[in-house]
Image 1 (cartoon, rainbow, N blue to C red):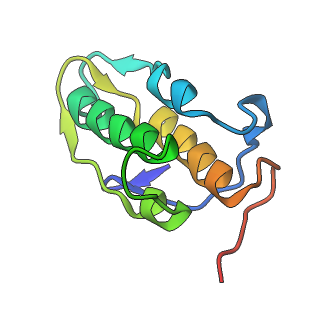
Image 2: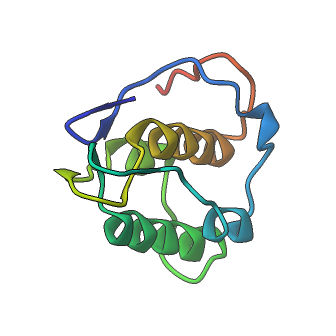
Length: 109
């Protein structure tokens, strides 16, 4: 879930995704809102492109903290991505980077 575009920690079972590969990140589709507040698809796609490149080793590595701290701008427009869907997927990416896909929250030191 998001609070002004920031991921809020939650218990989410990422087992359905398993450990994610860069191609999983690039191929992810999200529900869109017709006229509700959501994330700009271009902004989300650009961030996921950067995440996939980092996961593939083409750019500087990202950490789970980097993923969880990323903020998207909430906007009300036709075709905005559903924030809950995006945030849940980003949590699965963070858990992949931590090496955990279980249903329990991972506490970072």
